[in-house]
Amino acid sequence: MRRQWMKSGVIGGQANQNEPVMVTALINENPRAWKESLILNLFEEQVADEILAITISPNPKKDCLVWTGNKLGTYTVKSRYNMVHSNITRTEPNRASCSFKPPRTLWTRIWSLAIPPKMKTFLWSLCQNAIPTRENLHKRKMLPNPFYPFCSTHMETTEHLFLLCKWTKKIWADPHINLISNPSYITRFDQWLMEIFEGRDGLPEKELVVAVLWNI
Image (cartoon, rainbow, N blue to C red; front, top):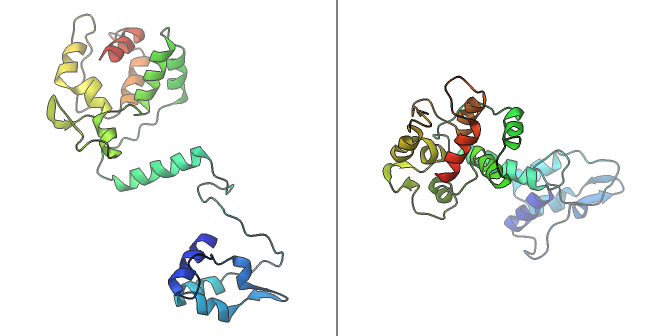
């Protein structure tokens, strides 16, 4: 609220742009009430009406900045990440989505694999879509386009790069692996990996699957 009022005070044209308007400066202490004439002078009519409609607490408190990303009002890296992720989801409504939510057992199974730690971290990054594919780099304005150089009509997503590209599909189709990837079925890498971990008959060993992903 305080930050919004500071901007509004500048818009009103009465406040010095280098001197932010403090909330306490807008309140009479005895009795505690809004300085209506000052507020009407500093802010646009709509903003002024919104301020005056707020009930003033009888117990005065010091002005402070409040982070709106969580209920505690305190900034954390996690709350900022959640806010950014939420914004990306809203601004990219046309991206394919899936109702699958990876269970906690997926992470447990990753960390329990008999593979080097760097490969476990790599696998976790794949499941989080946290590797620098051209799609991810393009979203961060680091590349002009998200398309895969070997398949110019497809975006270089995690799923396409490791599972659906015509080159990688040949690897998975090798008789020693014999794992066929259906483009119409695979929408999320973590969902695909969870099914591998479920260990249906005919699937290759989990460590072999991870080794293939690592080498790709």
